[in-house]
Length: 108
Image (cartoon, rainbow, N blue to C red; front, top):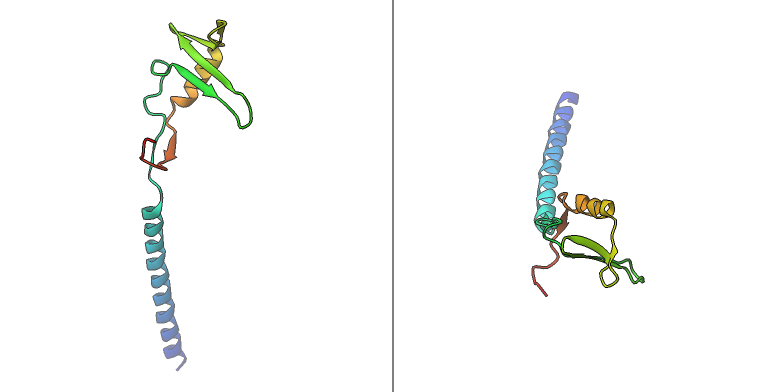
């Protein structure tokens, strides 16, 4: 009698494990389907394609870097040049592939 009960418990345990694996796979599939699609957000951004960079933290005035005739300025009106090493660092950072979630495809 003990071996029959053990066999029944073993069959039930295997069934429960199989059901858990099945439902876990379905749950992961549902999560992937519901997740926002991602895309590369820095694609095409290089020092040749960018003319202005605005850096602003909340509740600050921020800084605008502007490129005129191939030279980057912190203040273009007063011709205050930006540090070349810092500009190179910015572009080294954004030229790497950075992905983000698509929140909206509406241009507005």
